[in-house]
Amino acid sequence: MMERWRELIPDDIAEKYELYNFNSAVEILSQTHAESFEEITDTLKKFHVELSDILEKGGNESRVPKKLSAILRPLGWRETEISGDLVVHLLEGKARKVPYHEFRLTDFISGHKIDYVKGDIAIDLEWNSKDQTFDRDLYAFRTFFECGVISCGVIITRSEQLNAVFESLGSEVKKKYGASTTWMGKLLPRIHARRHGGCPMFVVGITPKTISDWEGNSHGISR
Image (cartoon, rainbow, N blue to C red; front, side, top):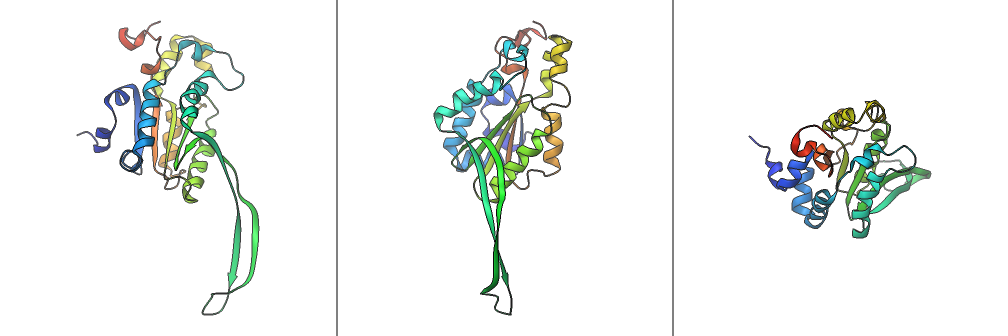
């Protein structure tokens, strides 16, 4: 029996990506943030990868995140950092209404960034970073959520299904996208361990079906 939340996902998105739903993220997006949900699904429809993106040499930001930015930035999705101080009140007596001492912890929240935020929805893409980046990302989602800045998060990364593509492109490519980089197998255990706190998360895996010039999409794994 198909999980009910999958009925809320457009068929072409469900076919193109590997999808997971944590803490009712899809229900929250589709039912209470319809405009953002439509922008997200439209973005996933338009988003594609080319073999040249996979084969490009290392350096600064790769072309894959730039392609996502080209779709989302014009729609008002902005990179956002959260910071804040904590004011601590010490109370005494039965009433405990008037603090006898208070102090401020400066930069109690500091340095947490998310790639794309619009309203109270956040999106992050991890294409090929060190897998420890997921710890930073999930803690950022958790912090934004617990501070009431966002109500839902979306994280996009590589599906394990892409490994067959990498292997066919040679040993250097396979090594470049190794087991210690950001892919679904490194993300899901962290989410199951609740490193995102209670933040609802819609998780999207990029599969070979997103590669526009990959012959394997219709003729089996081949170039």
